[in-house]
Image 1 (tube, one colour):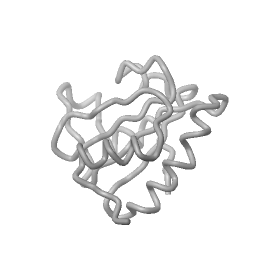
Image 2 (tube, rainbow, N blue to C red; image 1 turned 90 degrees about the vertical axis):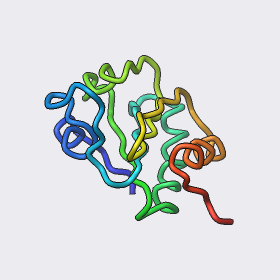
Image 3 (cartoon, one colour; image 1 turned 180 degrees about the horizontal axis):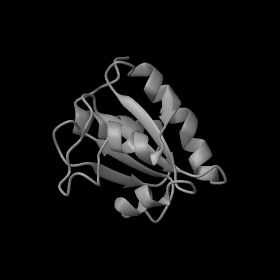
Image 4 (cartoon, rainbow, N blue to C red; image 1 turned 30 degrees about the horizontal axis):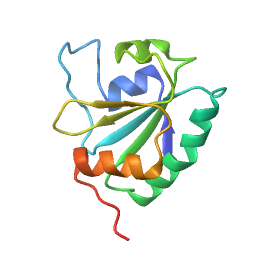
Length: 121
């Protein structure tokens, strides 16, 4: 399931930017964070793909979404100026930002490269 995050939940589950200057991921599983807006058509195209990814990789990966209209400060924190933007957060490395409406194969490729997760067919 894709979970919507508020700024407070983001600080608790992903990164407390008030407490830390340097990146420090708070989670134990890798995650994808979808920065989106309800009015954004490309965002609506990506949403069911991310839902599918969340279901297929349940227990190995978390998928979050942040509404930039309500939590613009979070988007600014990562320099997001275009949506959709997907932030791929590894448990060990710095996050990787991908801008645009990525297809399922593109998302799976980044997940394999950054997280070592591969969809078994």
